[in-house]
Image (cartoon, rainbow, N blue to C red; front, side, top):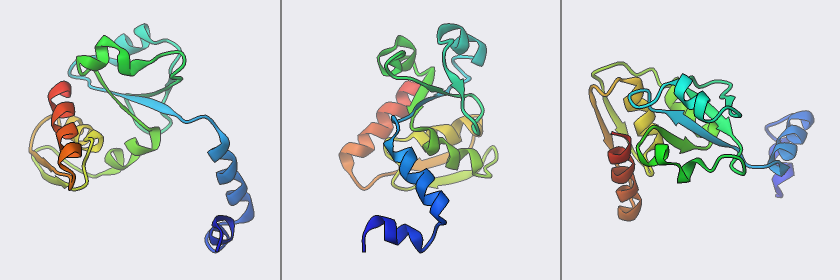
Length: 147
């Protein structure tokens, strides 16, 4: 069974068309602010051509050819975390509260864990793990950078 016929079992023709059209587009890039290190106002002052994420607060979509945020000193300082915009939505929707215990399996490179930690105001305990040792190391590096 090919991909389009498989989709027909679950989606309407117009939804399939929209999905296929979206796959042709340029990939999206987003930055989630670490409000412990940078405010929305500071970020927008430095990077004025970003667009607010349609769902996630304190997150911004940007064009990588205009801002290569991964090479920014502010990235190195942990002022924001770079992630695909849709990857930010699960942690935003997670009904977590301060001082909870959270288990994040298959957590590398750690974006959802960090977003959840920021949401919990760095309280509670988040256990983040990944089956791959090298990918698990990425969690450690990102958690240290983000503080």
